[in-house]
Length: 258
Image (cartoon, rainbow, N blue to C red):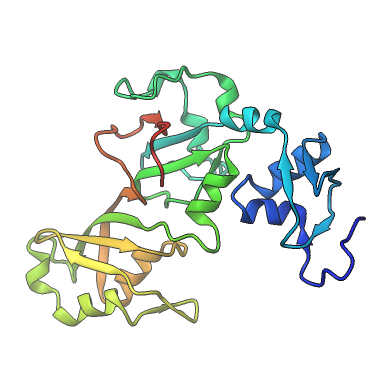
């Protein structure tokens, strides 16, 4: 396996390509195997390590393949799981088809079954929640949304109750509960990053999170005495749910970025 002499800081080529935003690690391995990647002028090999200064070149055929990858945005209904089907519940990918492709989709893409191949959720949305869920074939987009260094935030509208109170909940909720939601809570033994939390009206809170622990908002609310009655995600980064109807989907447009 090629290794640059004296390159103690060398890393795997697929990771380096992902760090540069060229592709996902899996795509990198595929491109390398096809002979579409060169390192310092020579053909790359799968699994090799390269120093940070290595010159990486990608064949235009790889770029062409990448341009055909799609990202789908769905307004996920309750009872649908984000990832693989489980416990008899359908996955979000399994309900995507021509029948529920939103007529308001401005992308002008025509749906084909190939768009469902290797389509994976970029993050999750609880089975009991609705709203914006992104599924993508593009590893770069998945990395941007859920990668370890992702700065993409997510926005939610959450209807809550307090000790059985479902109307004018804001008046019944102690002010300190809101302060704890914003900062000071911990889940799974780890402190949570600061969150933006504010009342939208008497019964709904608006959350903006920069992390995505499992059932995070529901668990945060439980810790301060609130109960989540309904939860809807309305934004991922710069991409909004907008007018996309519940249970329908559209393509991410060419000019849209998370």
